[in-house]
Amino acid sequence: MKNTRRNFIKTTTAAAAALPLLNLKLSAMESGVVVTPAASGGILREVLFSPGNITEKNHCYDRFELLKKPAQNPVMTAQMPWEGGGGINWGSVLRSADGKFKFFYCTDFPGVQEGAVLVDNSMQGKNHCVVCYAESDDGLTWHRPALNLYFQEKFPDNNIIFAWAAYYNDASTVLEDLHDPDPSRRYKMSLFHIDTKDNDLTGVCLFVSPDGLHWTFTGTVLPSQDASSIWQDKRTGRYYAFLKDRLGGNRSRMLMHSDDFKHWSEPQWIFTPDHGDSAGTNFYNQSAFVMAGRTLGFLNLYDLTTQTTWVELVESGDNINWRRMPSRPRILSPGAPGTYDSGGAYVGLAEPILIGEEYRYYYYASSDRHDVADTGGNPAQKPSLAYATFHKNRLVGQQTEGDGYFATLPFVCPGGRLFLNFIGKSEVTVCIKRPGYGGDYVGFSLAECIPVTGDSLRQEIIWKNHANLDELKGKYIRIKVAGKNLVGYSAALEA
Image 1 (tube, rainbow, N blue to C red):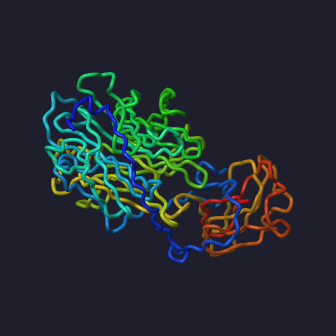
Image 2: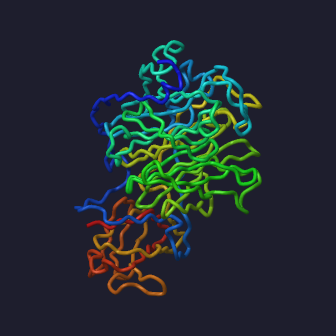
Image 3: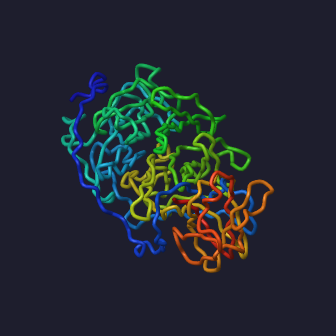
């Protein structure tokens, strides 16, 4: 197939082979955390103890768990001639419904095109920017299938799935959409594109595909600079676009949303530098995911003074209004000088993948600083795919120093049994409070709670005369957790 504009807009339906779902679950013993046995009729409500969900606290502080980098990183490096320009960058790793790990990533190779443009601090247009596909059974060992959809004469048996003549194509994000009833739209992709002939095609272009290999342009172009991404909230099916523009000279983040992938809201700012940032603070890209009923995100920060990037944790209660954590912790930092990610840990554009009781978050790792185009880099160590891990529902929470407590924002009680995700060597108790200036609900005080200790993802909480919260169903409640040197991550109400 020749790389022409006509072939670019065509799509060919291909049936995805059915593959068995891998059984990768970890036991409670393997994870090192006790999961309290209890019959469950399903989760009614989860409450994450993130900073934006907390009201009162005493001798209590926000808690963040840094992502851990396994020793086998990086797990996929540039090895093919069509990856010889920029290595492996800006990708989405999905755990598909068929059980296969699928990796969609950007790369480029030398190939003179007409003209060039300045993007950030480097001239673009001298390379062909393409999107490639790799797959894996375990997410660690990756295979590049011989697809030969583009450039097969130049690169026989290549895995390129997308090419479009451009000064620049960047930050492909791929979703597997299980909400859309149309099988020809099973996969969705966004891609920043600077067109060589039509300025109206410059922006974040949206595509659909039946198999993730053959793509059709929808005609929708969102207003943005490079370093963009899309996300779908699986609870509602709604789509969100995280876009880049500048406030003054600083890279900042915008948001648009859509219910049909065609009609989108107008952009609004969600992250711009503030009084706590330096003049060199820039927000580069981001991703989003749901944890314990709340939307979290990984936000890339890029610092002009060091030319490096790192990742902060951010949160939202409604997917529209976002906030950085008060202490702005670096949840994933660049590695030591000379290592595979010493120049930058760039956000992966897909959600973390839960395997047993542990999440894997795949990210784009660069050994070179951001100004590599001007200063030169290490040609033997190009950008690569790496991953970091964190424990299920244990990324953010609250911790007391000495005797302390914290309480959540009010929410409508669905009834059911209460379970706590916590660590506490000393006794931990929970009470159910009324909103506002109200005190405890009768029968649900700290004194009436049966104390618990230990390290549990799911410890049931009961009171002397109440085994569940059914009598509070429909009322506004706040959960208060108290104890000495405790760590609390989340709560769940279950039928």
